[in-house]
Length: 118
Image (cartoon, rainbow, N blue to C red; front, side):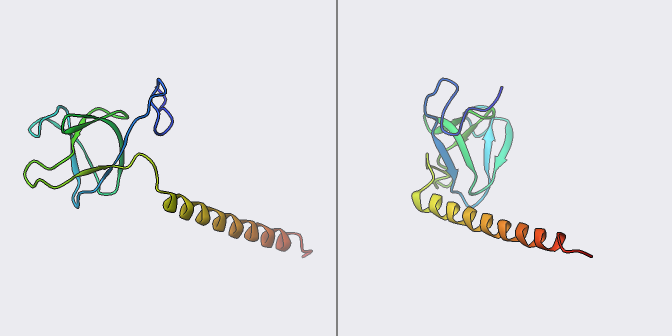
């Protein structure tokens, strides 16, 4: 099945977005238990989509659950972010515009070189 657009489920409902804020990779478990089978690991900084169920996030784009707070340390592992911050969006847009301008310049240079008689 194709993935729903970011932030929306197949029925159009909002799906929360979470970021791994732990310093170490976090475990994706088959069930809501730290002793449940390990399905995958998510690296620091990664974004996940899922619904909160008690102290866990049930992932929507793949099977599994990730605990929000580390059981052994009490440290926050996931933070709800939902949307990119305006400053991050602005910075990404500015970088994309800059890259597009450089590409246009390179294409113009290439056209100028390729059209010169030998």
